Image 1 (cartoon, protein in one colour):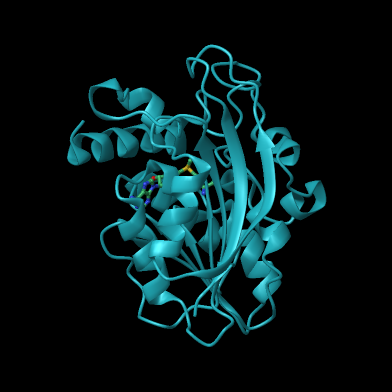
Image 2 (cartoon, rainbow, N blue to C red):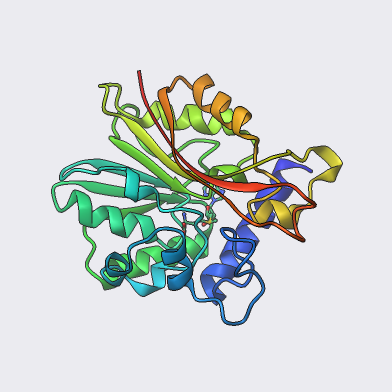
Length: 258
Ligand SMILES: C[S@@+](CC[C@H](N)C(=O)[O-])C[C@H]1O[C@@H](n2cnc3c(N)ncnc32)[C@H](O)[C@@H]1O
């Protein structure tokens, strides 16, 4: 499947979710896809978000398309600069903004116009002045300066990219190289990868067919130059139906720059 076709489909899928809500979510294939009673907030709590913390951010930013709660492991400090890759409607960017406070800054990056618009509207309406949402394709060029970021977070997005090594190299480029620059990334991995003609674009958009095995995922991170790789959390979903017997696991990974 061609890269540009996949990207167009991803933008279409997440544009629709931005406008109409989520009916085929990415994160928990077993419990919420294609149901009419899907509740983005309770689905987020089920994957690790704190209910009270969710009450402190715009409700519109919670769309239920993450696969973990990366900020539980990020240990963000006042004044830090954070980039959220594939920020969607803004859930993690807004939570991070509360943690880095006015002295810090959060930059959300997404390439789907309606997601960006939704996140920007929520930031303006709710007075989040230390959060900015920029348009960019994270596997092409992240629109952020070299060596300028303390922490890169991301939630269920890297699996959607077609060149994971290139994506992690871009992440490495923007992080500070002072021993503090770090990634805390929530993502899905698989027991068996899908390649070539077997790729189904709908399943790619659902974060399944673009997932790598754990070994390949770790190798991509290492090839980009990161060290001290750690799996901070791991949870395997029941995946009957959609995944043809493949086991889909959500992980949260951490690593630092050299
Ligand atoms: C599964 S959603 C996750 C959204 C958000 N992180 C959350 O947890 O709610 C994936 C998001 O990543 C964005 N995305 C996918 N591939 C991207 C890319 N190559 N560059 C920038 N954004 C991308 C999509 O537009 C979508 O908003």
